[in-house]
Image 1 (cartoon, rainbow, N blue to C red):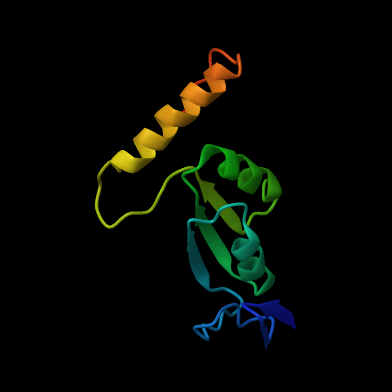
Image 2 (cartoon, one colour):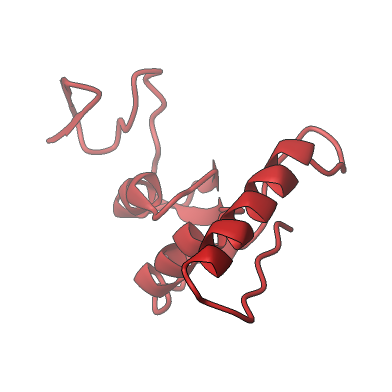
Length: 112
């Protein structure tokens, strides 16, 4: 049993929407972060395509599942159409500025 969203649920029932994941299912984890939900999906026997646009979270996600053939990681966001999200560019520019203020130079941050 796993405790997810403060409920006791069977291992293959990973969320409050009562989605049952079975061995051989194909799942998409959009906004995978560091892969906590991805891990639960593969524990149920699924093949998971995990998408995470944040380069820092993606690095941890990729490292966590580097040797797992049932997880394919993408350093990209998932959106309803091909577009650029201005808020993410503003966050990236602000982060670059703060890092440079700390004396760190030559850093390249991009959202894909």
